[in-house]
Image (cartoon, rainbow, N blue to C red; front, side, top):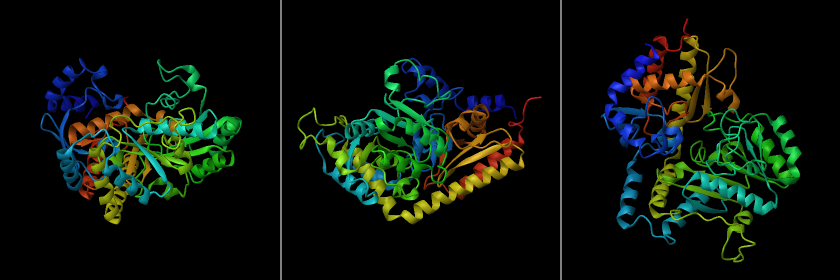
Length: 448
């Protein structure tokens, strides 16, 4: 089958979504409220999600590997979370004052990640990373933030630098050039080159903020020693080492990537999974650093680091859903992580085999329960964001459309996938079988 055949198949089965999208573009820029949620020819509209499935307005059911931006590790609407959330909604959704559930969730996070000596809740990951780098500047009295090329830390102004390819270009209007001069970018997985860059700014370096596994930039695990080398440099030179664990926290392990890779960050950020499907961001870490935001012991605003949280921070609905999720993960750690990690490995190995047997140059990256395919030149490697950006993204989008249109399997086009506890080996076998069929259809062959 040709790509156009898959698109027409998609259009035939999503008529109501097409009509909804024509309405949506009249009220949202581009028809969406998050840029990456658009894909051609138009996105399908979901009205329900349960377990491993998305259900759209046309009555189609998709096996979901996007899983709510990788947040739904227990699957969509898992019973213990849905029950806790329903109970809390009956009692109230926003109190606007402190609540007991926030203390319980914070204590749970602290038990699972002892490096979270203190924390502050917000409503998004973008806020959490914004607060983290602000705290680093407050602590060190320095200005420069170092981040990885392609590293994604949300839409906050400070860190919206070198996110999209070509990375040396400006990220677009609305960002003042002066802000970018205090952000320095380093090449992920190249420790020698990264340290050379950091050495030139060490006297004004407030922090290094890094995703332990590049998420949105391509599901790239760290090379051995890379994260440890960055941490050593930061601590040696009086800068803070910040791990952005919004994706990896409670995804790679119950205790985060810091535990997995033997790291000791000064600050780290959490989100996604610890909100149980509700909006959340968390900045946490060293008590001395976090205390810089304490309005009680530091009433003088000139001395205090201004990080807030917002109207909906620590709202009781999110706290209840997050607590139910982490409680379930803690009580069922071996079963949950054993299963999702095994399924992730099964998918990576199976996809690699199929593409190799089909003579389609492809690298399958990832770790634990996360995975992603990259269509590359023969013999090429995928080790950083540039490798991902220069791979054949058009071919990847076509592959994801074919899975969606013909086989009812959903990956947000060009993005990585993640397993949930609701998936099983039958789902992976279906994914592999569908991939074999697509490879056999000639979709990946170059036009003569």
